[in-house]
Amino acid sequence: AQSVTQPDIHITVSEGASLELRCNYSYGATPYLFWYVQSPGQGLQLLLKYFSGDTLVQGIKGFEAEFKRSQSSFNLRKPSVHWSDAAEYFCAVGLNTGFQKLVFGTGTRLLVSP
Amino acid sequence: KAGVTQTPRYLIKTRGQQVTLSCSPISGHRSVSWYQQTPGQGLQFLFEYFSETQRNKGNFPGRFSGRQFSNSRSEMNVSTLELGDSALYLCASSLPSGSAGADTQYFGPGTRLTVL
Image (tube, rainbow over all chains, first blue to last red; front, side):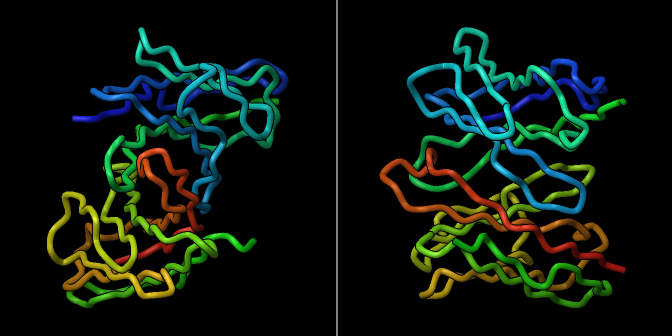
């Protein structure tokens, strides 16, 4: 069965420091990978996605992610975190089927300290 | 372009009642998916509709149902509410493509349902 693992439930980063959020997936076929962000009381906003091609993908708000097939990982990075980045981040895999379905990880809550 | 809208944003019901939630997709999007978000279970897929047909359903009891109209708007219904149905219900829309899994889903703000 498909699954997504985000091993860090909470991460605290100082403002201006770099950030890496980990994501590992388990899926037998070519994965479609997504990172979403959710602010309190809000829906999910797409940060970036990987379908094929260049394994380093750029997203909004200065985020990037790197797909590593050998490690089944799709880690999210940002070189310098801003206080407004505090939110919950979800990694998801889109199944390569004839219908829409995202399988989400459990999320990582990012706290930004001054 | 307007985003995905969901109504109502907040809802309080009591056990045994039923509830209907509404979702209007982004203009031109024909696929609508529903997800339940709870602290304990996280984000779980409920079902997906495309061209008024349910294409896939998650592992939820039959009390959870949905439908899609010809204008792609979708509703989901939960009958005989239980305390455990308290959750944020998120709707997402996407364009159709030849490879559905690759379509980007755009989410609405959600409906917060509280069951007392």
